Length: 211
Image 1 (cartoon, rainbow, N blue to C red):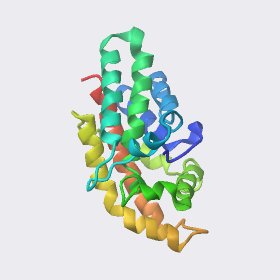
Image 2 (image 1 turned 135 degrees about the horizontal axis):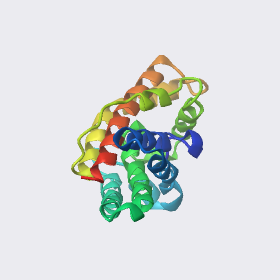
Image 3 (image 1 turned 135 degrees about the vertical axis):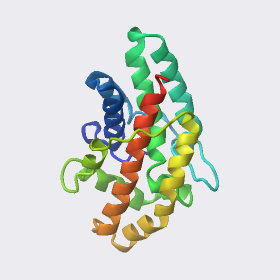
Image 4 (image 1 turned 45 degrees about the vertical axis):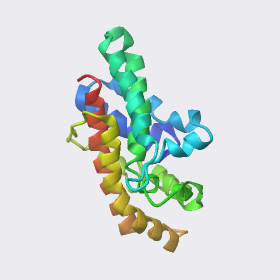
């Protein structure tokens, strides 16, 4: 599942776009990756939609393997030269989706049940509505200057999930306790913290494909 649904204001798109721009300084490459990033929410169906978009450090999940597979394809195409750049960065966008999911506490928390709850969708819509306006969460992503070292995309997903999971219970409670207006200091804090860390890993994943 994506944090956001509109590609022009999508967290998935914005995270990898910022990462590619930071590493390569190439807006075309960044746009290729950004446009592809939300796609797995449409192409992954049935149980794949849950399994490959989830990873709990305690019980597992498919996000690490999904990210690793797509990143491997991106790396291969990047090594083939300029004629294959678009394919490389589109696959990087796909890979980044699974990585970024691991930065969202409801993708790393207690169980798959969180996918089925209205609160999950409400939170993703909240981030959507506050990406470029309101809280302007995109600012903490676009201002990132840190590139995490990513030598194994699968492990990167696991590391990011270990970062976001501790925020799950607090975020879940915050939304449940304020179902009509959970735009609280706590919600903003958790969202910003997780997005900042996820931005660092997206930059690292972008750099990985040329290594």
